Length: 109
Length: 113
Image (cartoon, rainbow over all chains, first blue to last red; front, side, top):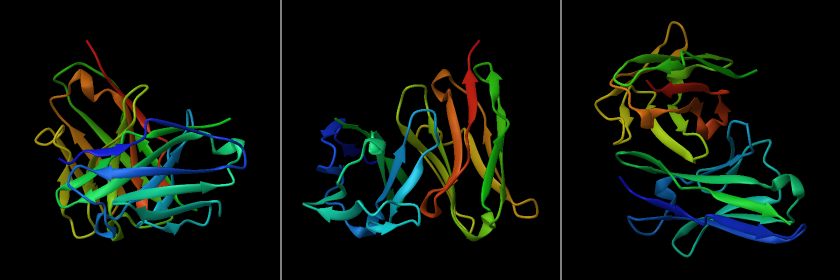
């Protein structure tokens, strides 16, 4: 199965902007891989932030957005808040199944 | 209100079997794709299996041939039959419809002698 890569860790200042990326060992990520993004805080189940590249759920803060950028899926956080400190995972859907990235630990500092 | 409630986890010896259940309310499991996701202690999320609305099932290579996903439409419940369990299967198992942001609270499976 494919390997999905994410930055292991990133740091952003409060109020700052950061972009997390999600790459695929099979080549460029396109909307055909239906990128999903999840947020997970310690001791909690994951929550879905973004589905199908750029669609938000009703709970998704407006400061989060999803896109395709440079052959990867991207999650951009604009105006980071302390509450955004969490682990973020992407999920790509392939013909034979789905694969999570290794996750990005985002620190707001 | 949507709820997913997993059950069936516990301590099991290597080589043993467990059946996880995920009771859904507030939506119909047969109308969307349902997924099992696991998370080993201190590790990231791992996709395990999916069952599509049409009944197609897919598995991660790590569990193929050992795990079986199924659903009971009359009970609106998702299952994961896990056989030939190994220490590396130790994890919290979540049932989910990720695209819809439906997630259970997870059930812990510990494989140890």
